[in-house]
Length: 115
Image 1: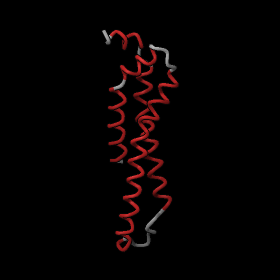
Image 2: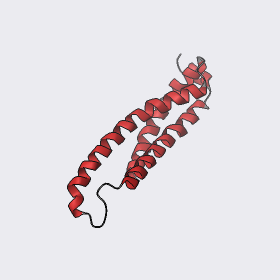
Image 3: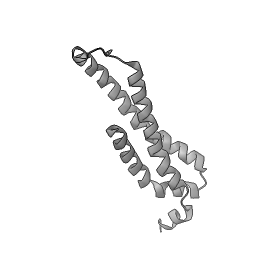
């Protein structure tokens, strides 16, 4: 839960900072769906890298701690899968909520901020 809250807050803040950029892209003719796809793609890349590093580290940690586990398999695929899916879902929500809010903003207001 702590990792999910951290991912949500960092990604939500970074997407919220790009609100003006998203408004400008829409004002210049980009479709909202294309802008949303771009934001999802760019924001999920660091999440994927973090998940890959985290999975690698957890596999190593499980091997080191396997003697301390009692009646629990050291590499529980169900647990690893649930954690990865939960973090990806949290990350997607963290990206989608502020991005959709930014896409609903007035593109003309974003252009007025340029001058």
